Length: 120
Image (tube, rainbow, N blue to C red; front, side, top):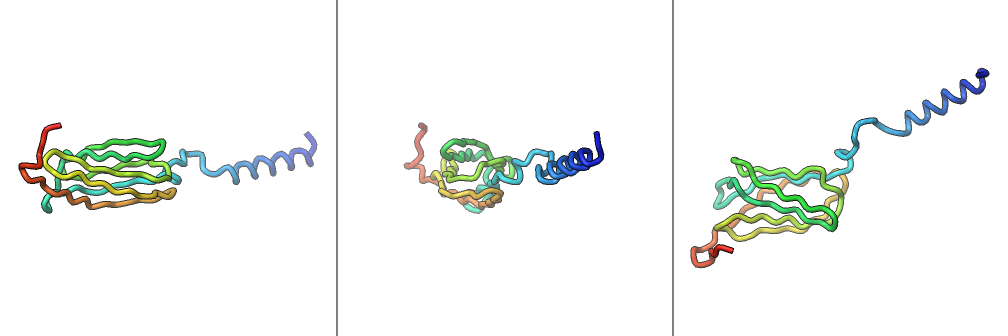
C-alpha cells in the first residue's frame, strides 16, 4: 500500500468512526418513558393496572407496593394511558410523546359508590 492510499484509508475509517455515533444501543436516546404514582383518596395505591396503547405499541404494567409505575422504551407517538382497579373509577389520558420525553404523572382515582361496583 502506498502512502497516499494508506492516508486516504485512515481518513475514511476515522470519518466513519466519528459519524456513526456511539456503539451502545441508542433506543434510550430516542424512546420516551412514563412514570408516576397512583392514589385513591390521597393514599398511594398498589395493584393498579395501567395500559399504554398506541398505533403499534401496547404495554400493560401493575403498580408496585408503593403505588409506583414505570413504562420505558416507548417509541415516540400518540398514546392513550388508562388506569383501572376494582372499586375505583377508570382514569385515562391521551398524550403525544416526542422522542426522549419523560412524562411523570400523579394519578388520583376516585372511589366508586357501592351501588356502582359490579364484577365484570
